[in-house]
Length: 343
Image (cartoon, rainbow, N blue to C red):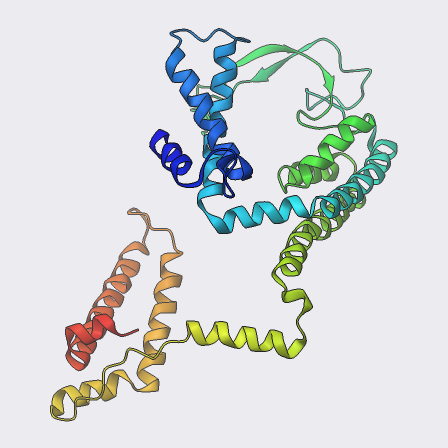
């Protein structure tokens, strides 16, 4: 990195030249990362106590991966569009916060204090959730059945009336936090299951509506804002319908390529015969059917002690043999080089 900074400084200058390193945001970031790394390298502390200058330098060194934005122009452009669309993104954020606040208020009024349960499954009322009870201890999550003269180990545990471990709707802050986590599609099934078990099916619709409005519509607005800003700055937003179609056609023409299919070998009758078979529509459909059947066979779990294992293994060997025959036929018809280049 030192050599890179020196070469950039010699080529573009540091302060007063038209393309000075300091005049570019990416150059400022590179110079800052270089300075932090140089100071840390010269200092090289043996111990890094908490809340010290060495720890601050180590934290600042974590920004080194951000250099990828200056090295990749397309990624830098995406970050630039995100910064330019800050106002629109802020408006979308306010909209989502208002939506979360509305649903959080509803959750506090409807579910506040109603999700708590006793850790003893035999106790249903809060007044009875006192004392201790014997709780079984499971060493593994596997469903292992104890033997005839065996039982699960247990220990005395105090009864506690508590909310679910990861969320609750007892106040507006906890409700907002729970709904914010739902926006990332993480944990919303846990909330739904708790609502189903403790309050009934009708209350579980609440979290489904929030997922639909907040995740599927609200978060999509962020993507829409970035794409809209990118299109406006690129100029595609100002194009007419016909102009956009022409641009799309140009992109498709760049992608389009001719088929790499060898011609029919008319001089060799046997190869021509095999070629006609491999290019026949019914042969292609037959191979496609074999692929689908083999895919369905891969979905079945195999166990050595089950009766259907031998038939499944036989079918798998038959599919492998048929696919091998197909490869041999195409290698004969196209030649090995032509088969390798064909699609």
